[in-house]
Image 1: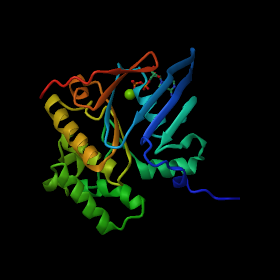
Image 2: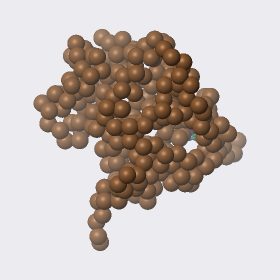
Image 3: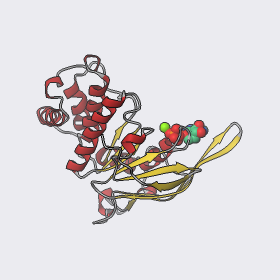
Length: 244
Ligand code: ADP
Ligand code: MG
C-alpha cells in the first residue's frame, strides 16, 4: 500500500484553519442537542479571531472540532488546506501535537515542574533535546516578560503569570494554529488585558492563526475579527476597540 505522509496534502496559501458546514449534535438524556448547525470559518496565518457567545452556546464544541480533539457530526475541518476528517487518529494526533497549540481557562501546568520545564515539555515529547528545549523555553518565557520566573514552580507564580507560562507552552512547538478557550476567564480585568496582549503579540510575531473564545467584550474589541455563536451559527460582529 502507498503510504502517504500527512504533510503532503498541505495547500500553499490556504487558510490555516477552515471550517466548512461543521455541525455537532450531542445525544443527551432528553434526546439530541445540536449546538453547531453549519459553521463556516477561515483564519489566515497571523490573524487573531475572537469567538464570543454566552455559556452553553457551543464555543468549546467548536474549538474541540477545530483542534481535532473531537470529530464533528458533519462538515469539514481543514488545516493548512488539508481535509483532516479523512485522516486516521494517528495522523490527526500528529497534526494536533505538531501544528496546534491549546490554551485553556485553567493552566494545567505540572505543579512539580518549574516554568521552564513546563514550557519545554511539549518540545521534549516532540523529540527536542533537553538543552535546546530549555533554551527555547527560556526565550519564550522572556518574550512574555517572565525572564526572572523561569525556575519558579506554578504555585510560586500569580494567576496571570501561570497563564503566560501556559501560553508559552502552547506556542513552544511553533504551531500553525492557536486555540484558546476563555484563556483569561479566571483572571481579573487588568491581568486579563496583559495576558491577552502577550498572547496576541506572540501570535502575530510567530505568524500563528489564533481563535480565542472569550466572554470578555473588551478583549473581543482587540481581535482582528470577532464572531458570535448564535443558535448554532457564526455571525460576524464589528470588533469595536474600547481603547485601553
Ligand atoms: P460553551 O463553551 O459556549 O459554554 P459548549 O460547547 O461547552 O458551550 O456546550 C454547548 C452545549 O452543548 C451546552 O448546552 C452543553 O451542555 C452541551 N454539551 C457539551 N458537551 C456535551 C456532551 N459531551 N454531551 C452532551 N451535551 C454536551
Ligand atoms: Mg466553553
